[in-house]
Image 1 (tube, helix red, strand yellow):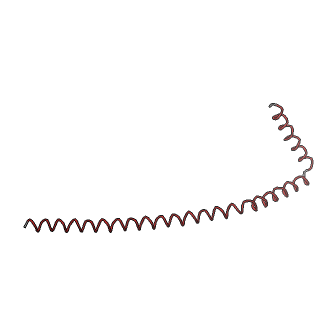
Image 2 (cartoon, helix red, strand yellow):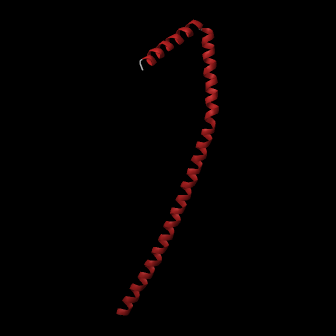
Image 3 (cartoon, helix red, strand yellow):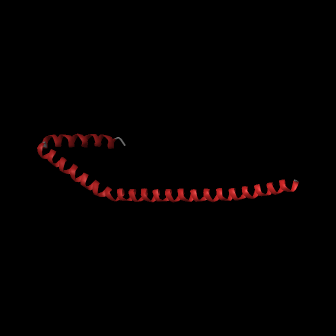
Length: 100
């Protein structure tokens, strides 16, 4: 009877060991899967950021041309107002820089 209990206990320990190993393998597989998913997402975000960064000079140049054209139109339509605004900005900058 005592031998049967010891054998049952030994079987339970062996089963526990198998279950623990299986659980460890499953956990490792799940962790590897999540790591791969995160790696893929990071790579996608990096590629997206690179693509956006490559577009910045083009967008900036287009926006600069747009602003320059708008400014040119305004100056041609309101030459004296543009001169007055430029003189005012120059005066303000002159006062600010002369204080240093």
